[in-house]
Image 1: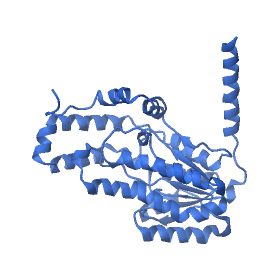
Image 2: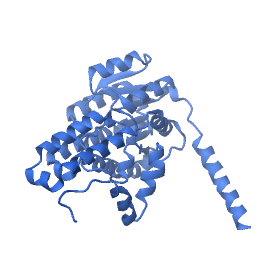
Image 3: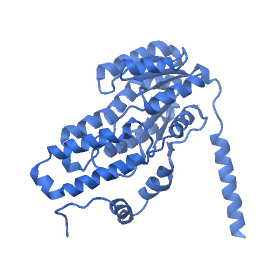
Image 4: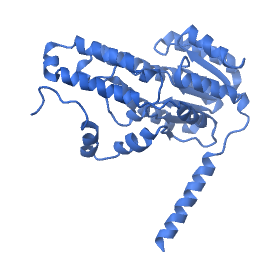
Length: 319
């Protein structure tokens, strides 16, 4: 008796959730959305995707070439601005530029997409400045952009969409990447709770491995090789050449499995901006849904086993 009832209740809950999440806002054509990191990848694709939907896209690019290439593929509604998220003056200028465009309507959406992924290596192979560079872009830049644009977002009672990562939930590589994305999760949770009473919604995108420039194998292997070459003789002896070679192979294997269908991520971003009831977290990618997220909930002894079983072994480790 209880089993059929449980099945019916579960189906009703799923139908309710599907109906609720399928409701999309009207009058999207008068809404302004600013996206960072639009030269390539998710930001570039999302800018064109929202432009086709009729929304007014303010696309922030790092380079003039990126901005010009994007404008050639979009409608005349789309406008671009050069933005370096690590430069306080650049962020401030971009905010003033956007404010002059949106005026009293405010900014409906801010998508913090800009970021880098390299270097990834054992922590001991890196120096403080390696961590600082990535944190400056992936975390501090995101925070600075959010704080500068927040008054416009509050005015529109709009949306903030922050790009984290599946490995912001569970650490699988050394270096600052996972650290930066874990911190993005924390910042997003705190700003979401602070903005609730202003009518602002905050969503976090936690993609698995998708084939963007961030996962290009060549730059990762080059950075790994440079870090290895610059380590001390003691570190080289402790880890061993075989450790380095296997670490490089594992990185190459991870990047080689990247999903080429970037719309899996940009569709989540679009939903976060256009749905009446956006999700707090989106987890695009089968690797994210069926591996990274489930493993993050396992007891430490089990998650450590799964993540370490294929890891290279140091030359001078425990025998």
